[in-house]
Length: 171
Image (cartoon, rainbow, N blue to C red; front, side, top):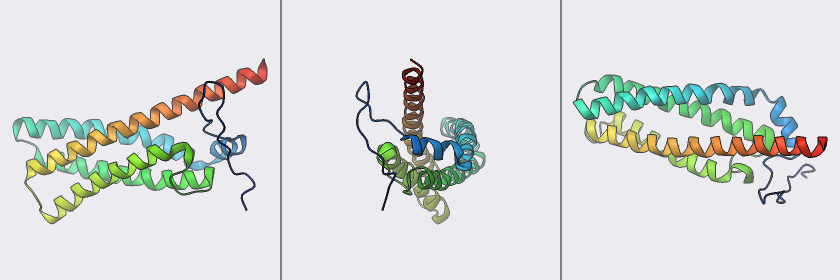
């Protein structure tokens, strides 16, 4: 029995609220919210450095080892944020993944995870050429950039909804 099952009625402006009041309370009290807030920018910085190293390798043919190492580090950071993110969703929404509020972000996250994992399989298995693996990493990075944008837009919407709710209560 789920007494706190979220209702996704559309609010002002037509957008469904991301959090019920109870979910917002659980989000704000969860240590995983802080973990996600720390891991996300760290992963993004790793991404930027790695992207530069991969592009350098593709442009010059030099630095394959550094680029490869950076992709492995980026993939480990991705696994960490995916695992802790699913724990966060479980604590806030009561479900490990694919909650309605973050359904499409989670779906796209699976593609990001699959491409990063495919890179690791190719690397460990020695499949493809170095250049081919770097191109696979670029595909993984493109999907990561889209997914990161999805989450940034969703968090921005949550802040705007929170600010609207605060104004409505105060007014």
